[in-house]
Length: 348
Image: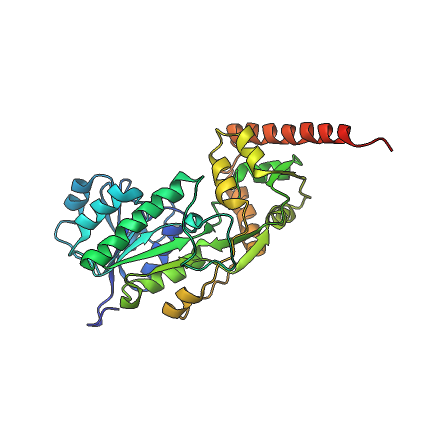
C-alpha cells in the first residue's frame, strides 16, 4: 500500500520467466495494480493474465518503451532484462522521475569464486572471470549505484541465486538430465559432487521481492534473495532419481575438464565459474527489510512436482539431442581417463 492507502502500482519488465512469473502472481495476489511490459504480451500459462495490464515494448528499444508507458507513473519498477552499462543508463533515462522505486534484478553468480568465507553476504567480493552474464549484471549494478550516488536515483539491487520452478529444473541440462536418469544413463556431476549448492524455489523468491516493493529502506541497497535449501550436487541428482523411482548413475568430472571437452556447451563456463563452487547465503539483510520472508519450499518435495509436470507436459520436457550428445561426450571422457589412470596403478 502507498502512504495514501492506495494499492501500489508496479511495472514488471519481462514478467514471464521463471522467477518473474511467480513475482507477478504474488504481486497480483497481494492486491497491487500490476503492469507487465514485454514483446509477447501474455505468457502462456500465466493464470493471472486477466488481472494484469499488458504493455507491448522492447526494453532494448527505449523509444518503444516510452511509447508503451506514455504518461504512466509507477510506485515501483522491476526490471529482469537489463545487462551492462549501456542498458542500465537507458533504463535510468526512461524511468528518471517516473518511479519512486526501481529494482534491478541482478544475480548472485557475480560473487567471486572460490568464495573466501561463508555464508556469502552482500558485501562479498564481486567478480566472475568465467561467466559473461555475471559480468554484464555487475556492470549494470555499478551503473545504478553510481546513479544513486550522483543523483539519488531510487534503485535497489536484487541478487537471486539458482532459482527454479516446476517447469524449470535447476540442473545443467535440465529435462535431458531427467530423461537420462529415468532411462538409466550416466550423468556427469562437476567435481566430486560434494560442493554445497543453494536452491531457491521461484515462489519463495517472489515472497522476498514483492516484500521489497516500495520500501524506502531498500533504496540504495543490494539484497540477495535465496532459500535455505542447501544440498550437495550428488544429493540433488539422487533426489531427482528418487522422485523418478530409480537409482542415479553418477560420474564425477573436474569442472575444468568439462570446459575443455565441451567449450560449446552453454553450461560449461557457468559450471567452472559458479555451480562447482560451494554457495551458501546469509539472508539476514532481506529479513531485516521483509520480516515475513521465510522460504518454505524444499527441493526434495518440489522435485516430485517436477516429475509430475514432466509427465503432464511430454511435448516440452523431452530430451534435447545436442545436450544429450554433450553429456555422452563427457561420460566417454570420464571412462577414458579412468582407464588411463587405472593403467598407471602398480601391479598387485
